[in-house]
Image 1 (cartoon, chains in turn blue, orange):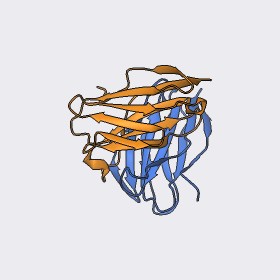
Image 2 (spheres, chains in turn purple, brown; image 1 turned 135 degrees about the vertical axis):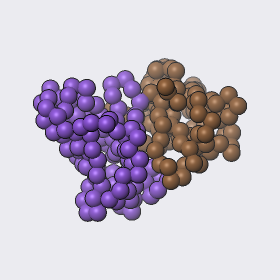
Image 3 (cartoon, rainbow over the protein chains, first blue to last red; image 1 turned 135 degrees about the horizontal axis):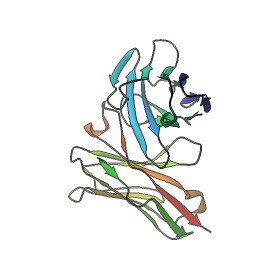
Image 4 (cartoon, rainbow over the protein chains, first blue to last red; image 1 turned 90 degrees about the horizontal axis):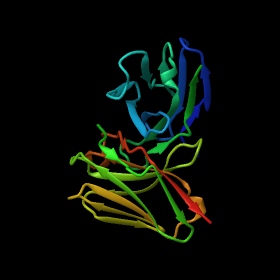
Length: 113
Length: 115
């Protein structure tokens, strides 16, 4: 009865490297959402995906950020050429399609040095 | 352009007393509201919700009140316990919580309950 699994829990990258964050939704959930929490801020919506489809990416920065949710395997949030301002906690949530039962993972803390 | 505002960054109350956390919103299209609790180094966990067709929802020690005309909601915790110490986030959704899915969060209020 695993919940939403995110890995790694902590990720350190040098400026200019790529960061890959993974999210496995709860069993039976086919909708995945990514949020970012900057220091002293609330959670900001980034992207909403279903299997093989991006439904809403209105919160994604226009450059360097991409997300996918393939038919098999976890959802991936990819950040290319990371900068210090990308340092944040990234949370993934999954649901069956509505906010009822919307469940968050424990997050990945990205630190860019 | 914050659509969901939690104007108090922190709140301190004595164990056994009532904690009242407030939240304001600007978008009249929001029709479903949720409160999440977050401990350090963990993800947010769902606490309680309310739809816009109601003005009150109660679950044990937790009650959420919604004032649609004022675009204001509040979370009451009574009696407060030290284990309630956490950051509380207010979140809003349109479409009666339906397939839109994404939530709009406030910045959170850090509650400290002192023994």
